[in-house]
Image (cartoon, rainbow, N blue to C red; front, side, top):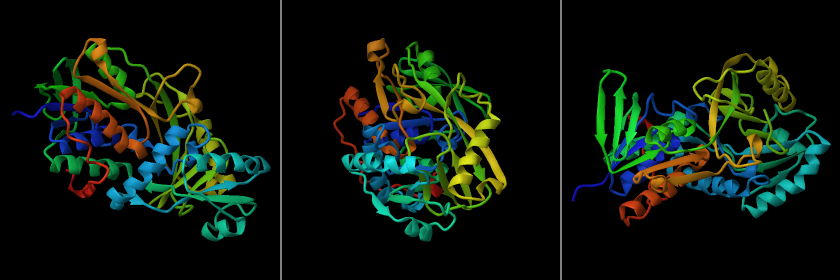
Length: 379
């Protein structure tokens, strides 16, 4: 019997994880990406392996998903992670007043926390503001977005998936995708049984090619990378999620982030100078001297957030949604939006469950326990 053929559009963390999941279930998979792996939103995020604590108060469902996936990923891809934990720090009375709300929400989402004194926190991170009032230790970590994505691709390829980078989707029809190979300039037509649209903030464009509506909120965020490792743990302000309230160590650098505002075009995101200034100002408060460290680079990307009435920007859910476009008159065409890199494996599981149900395939998900190959084996 011929295996069903699935074309997955977008080789960010979500698309790569879907390719991995479906390949493990025995499907024939082709993963296509107009640029390289993690070239879009995934490759321009703050590289934080979330404990879930950041969203415990405002978005408990997403918080629980992050907390569970944090534990799973530690077992599946240890060579792509830096398991350094994190601190939520209080630098004002307002931060202290948020403490009980934060701890209670973490407990309800089963997110481990450990209250430590200011003195203990300063021993762990001597560069912190000496006026620190209190700190809470959580299970944050750091990943390299490129290596993270390549680990899924490497394992998918081992299980038979085909990966076509620098290949742009130019037309979508039921059971057929037309691709443009950037290197050769040729156009090729792929027949397939299923198309999964995992193009992140570009997903509405792919859906439009297929003739179906898809709405999301493209929320951009600016991040600045400093030419020094300011800390060894992920540092968060003990406050509701806001602009510029996280410092993430990444190898010998530090990523400051992130801001949030709506954009029209995810391919055209001008970086406001005042956003960079805000990042440096808050970093200086958290770790004195940070604003004097040379900036290595500034980047911005659009997040494909779920668009719900009355919930925009910071208030928008960090969860995800899967769509079966059969109801739109296009059977075999699916889309997925939202989520975070930390939850990519879980998102892929849910999307793949829907695809397999549609194809009447009963093979269960195996990605929770299947170790991922090294990113070095992907290409």
